[in-house]
Image 1 (spheres, rainbow, N blue to C red):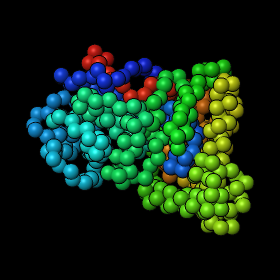
Image 2 (tube, rainbow, N blue to C red):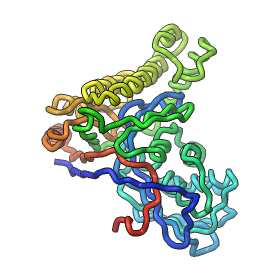
Image 3 (cartoon, one colour):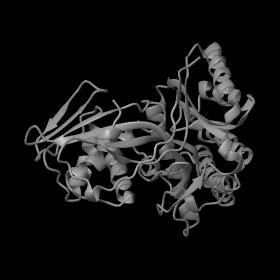
Image 4 (cartoon, rainbow, N blue to C red):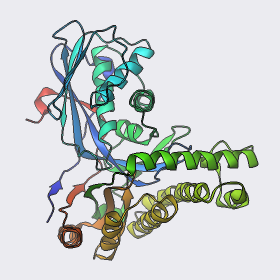
Length: 398
């Protein structure tokens, strides 16, 4: 059986306006898992993520030199730079916090010399957004060091820009926003165009008797990095056709399947399929809102299963291992629904499971996967937790 990690929600509160770095302070940012709405966040669509209790810890102290120092217990290389340094990315982990620093500098926020140490337990390469967790934790630490505060919306936007412009990854806004704005016991319904959001209850009605079970397939196929770019291009090309045919459309977030069908002949088959996934997944997110307020795990689970079929068939970002995990999970007692979460081509699945069945579910799923692929999957049994926060020294884990 794979490793079973059980984490419960922890509440935090945070404001940079009164956080002053006189000694070491630690800022924490969770990981996230997405329940519905995948690959919709760079075309003005809807997403439904929640924060989960795996954390990046960003500990900041006054600088030991006249410049900036980035170090981590998770990676061997340390990065040090002068305050005047404006160099580009170097291709390792330090690009993520450095990209955040560059975005703050572009906004006229120049932190005093600091040493930033990153640690934590967010699984890397699993599709639970370790990079965004690093970015958001770093942003709050550097803001506090600068004795400056920004609205969480702007924190999310600048962290996304760090990844887009400095690291060079064409991600959407979902990960950074969810990690900044999450609320314990709730998922986050986010309109990625307007950044308007609602907190939807995970603890209402029969939903309160379920767990979110994340299963890390432990695989990441080598095609992933190139195929992400291909999918992104196909989506943008299809969206451009739609906007030409329907000038009132701002992006795919406004589009309907009927409009897509009428524009089908003007775009490639691949763009048609990618856009069909995005438009249909937007609709699934909005239907999920009703299911969650009704406390209906059956309805929510069915939407998750439909979402996976769309990712597999229309967006073509699943793989044999993940498909096996979803199909196996869906057939197990107590499972309401399951799907691929994250970018795809490996990574994690997310399942909605009755609490009374969770233990048996995790054993059956990991044993079946081990038998089929000879891979020991990891299982994370998750509660929805709060977003990024200042953790006082007394609360800091050893």
